[in-house]
Length: 189
Ligand SMILES: [Zn+2]
Image (tube, rainbow, N blue to C red):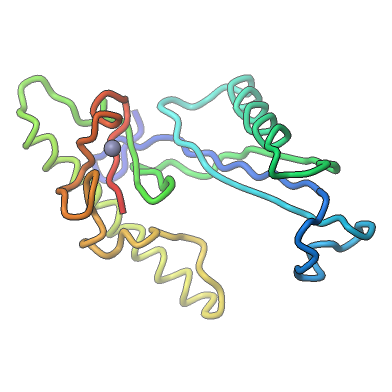
């Protein structure tokens, strides 16, 4: 098991998808229609995923196929064409940024001998190390590119008051039924 500062670290992959589609808004940036006939625009999406163990090429292909199908079958996107997508290794990290939350695998923390409150404390200490480490990298990337947005984002996790459980004011990590019955631990923002 790979570790960073004593915490279990997992492979994180990012994927990117791009395609052209019918333009229904008629009100967009010129770059969005570059090289396309009238009435068409480019669209794209990207995301990332944390894996418990390093995925095989076949697993990656299967995940990308699922993502491709979701996009191609989404009625929001009309007449998709020029479709391309890719998935690539990003880095090993202890926590993964998801939609308004950070997540990691519960297995890294559960110990039979420890009560839940001790486990929760270990989880928060691990997250604190992750945030501190990435805060420094985030500041460096902003200094190197003052006009850019930086390459690292913590989505507000650098503010400790944004660490919460299921609802505002609940202590982190999230103790909702979905989280406690899944293999993931989440800290919501
Ligand atoms: Zn939850």
